[in-house]
Length: 571
Image (cartoon, rainbow, N blue to C red; front, side, top):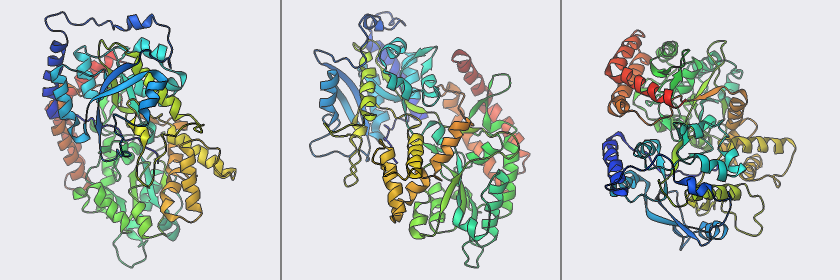
C-alpha cells in the first residue's frame, strides 16, 4: 500500500509552556520596539500580480524550511533532502530553490523547533502540528492564505483537498481565514474509520454465515471462543481480541484490537467531540450511549469471549495471539491485513481473514468516527516575500503525482523494493487525496471484473493490481493485498462508508485548550481505568455515572466550555 511517511510533529503537553514563551520571543525578535504586525496579510502586493499557478520565478527565488526524517527516508548515494530528483524539477519548472535550515531525526523535531521559535529565525514555511500552528497564529506570525489559495491553487490541488468533503481545509480555517495548507493522507479521513476483521476459514469450519448485524459479529466471536475452531480439542481460542489501549488511535486510523468500532455500533463516540441536539459540542466518552456497549463487553468478558489478560496486552501482543492461530475476531483498521494478520497467514496458509463493516446494534443507522483528515499543516511565515510559492510547490507536486506519461523523465513515485528508496517523500510540500486508495481499490476491482492486465491503470492502482494478480497466480506473500484492495478487500468497506456517508469527523478542530493541556492526561487515565474495570466486572455499570461526575469536576466542564467557545467562533 502506498504511503508517504509524514514528519513526526507531535508536540507533547510538556513542551507547550516552552512553546508559548518561544512564540512570544519570536514575535519580539521579528519586530523589536515596533507595533505588532497588521492582521491584514502583506499578500495584498502579491494580489496585484497576474495569478499564474505554475508561473516560473525569474530570477530564481529561495524558500527556507525545516524538515524531519526517520528511518523510512532512504537516499541514493550522493542524494539527500538538500539535493535529490526534485531539486532540478523545482528550479526548472518554478524557479524555486529550497534551503533546509536544518534537517533532524523526527524524534528531535519538537526540541529543535522550539529552539528555532525562540530564536525568532522562522523559515519561510514549515510543516507543524495543530498545537504549534495555533500558537503561531495567536502570535500573529502566520500568513493568511485565503486569497492566495483561491487565486493560485490549481483545480487539481483544490479538488485533492476537497476529497474529504472539506474537513481538512476547515480544520486549518480560523476565524474564517485559511491559515495554512493541510497535509492530508490517503489513510486518514474516512479511511481511518473502524471495521471488524473475522477469521473466515473458522466461520466456514463452524458453518457460520457472514455477519449482517453487530449481534451476528459478537455471536461469531462467542462461537470462536466456545466451539474449538482450531480443532485441537482444547479451550484455547480467543473470540474477540482486545488490547489494553481500548481507545487508542494510531497515526492513520484506530489501533488494531481497539474497541472504537464496537462503541460506534452502540452510537457511542469515546474520546471524540460530537454535536448534541442544541448544536453544542459534548464529549463522547461521558455520554449515556457508552453504557450499553460497556454492558455488552462486561458480559462477553464474563462469558470468556474476551481474553482474560487483555488489560495488560498492547496490540502487538494481541497480534501474536493472531499469529499463533488463537484469535478469531478483532475490531480494527483498513491496513490490518498488512500488519496485524499477515503473520497468521504466513504461519498458516489456510488461515483467512476478511474485513466487514461496522453495523449498528439496533435499527438506527450507524455513524462511525473518523480521524482528522490532516494532523500536520504547512504554514507560511508572516511577511514572507513570496507566500504564494508554497501553493505553487503543491501544484507542482500534484501535477507530477497525477501525471501518467513519464516517458521523458523518471517517475519519482515508484518505490524501489530492493532499496526502499521512495523519492516521492522528499518533496517539501505534499499531500495525498483522502480517496486515493479508495479509488485505487475500485479501479483494481473493475480491472479484475473485465479480466484486464492492468497495463492501462494509473499509479497507485497499477501497483495494487499487480500485487493482487500476483497473489492469484500463487504468490501467497501478497495475500495482504488481496484482502486490502481485492473485491472483498478492506477498502471495499471504506468505499461503502464513503458512498453511504455514515461517518463523521471530530467536531472540535482546534488545538488543545488550556485546561486540556493541564488536565487531559488525568482525565484519560480515569476514563481508561473505569472502562477496563467495568469490562472485567471489577466495577458495576453504575460506576460509569460516578466517572462522569468525576470527569466533569476534575476539568471536564472547563474543557467543554473552552471547546464550545472555540466552536462558536469557527463554525
